[in-house]
Length: 193
Ligand code: SF4
Image (cartoon, rainbow, N blue to C red; front, side, top):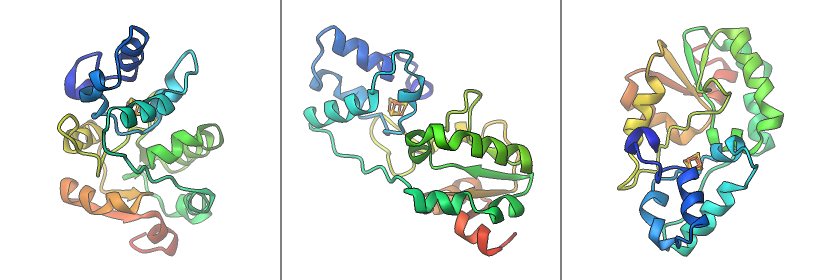
């Protein structure tokens, strides 16, 4: 949101400050509509405030449409952590973690993905603080543009193939990148590996 707007009000910190000073959910509905509910702010909050829960409540109060964030349950992480993933990943692959699922299970999963990156040399959508950069696909609004988000995701990365955990991101990423995009289940089966 910061990259697209360069305004503090378009941030979780901005929401919290506005609410602390008496703003209603309706009054911050414009910046709220830019939030894609990735859950990264919960991990970054120094006071450990459940910002995501606050944001969801505010969105409801402001009458904003509900975002159905698809979270992978343990079965899906079982696919992501299958031994074949590591065997079939290449150093010129870009592996895109489903950010919402990752942030919701951060403590259990961060070490796994870090080890995967180091073992294979692939690029992963983790920033320097080991927070996943979301794609924002399927969450476009007047205040959030997923194409710009993906431009940021691709910035400075060199890759020949994209691997996704979330199947819903596959087609859009293929269109934008012009690269082959495969789902983790295909990687396990050895397709294109
Ligand atoms: S849930 Fe994600 S998009 Fe929304 S405020 Fe938090 S970090 Fe930003």
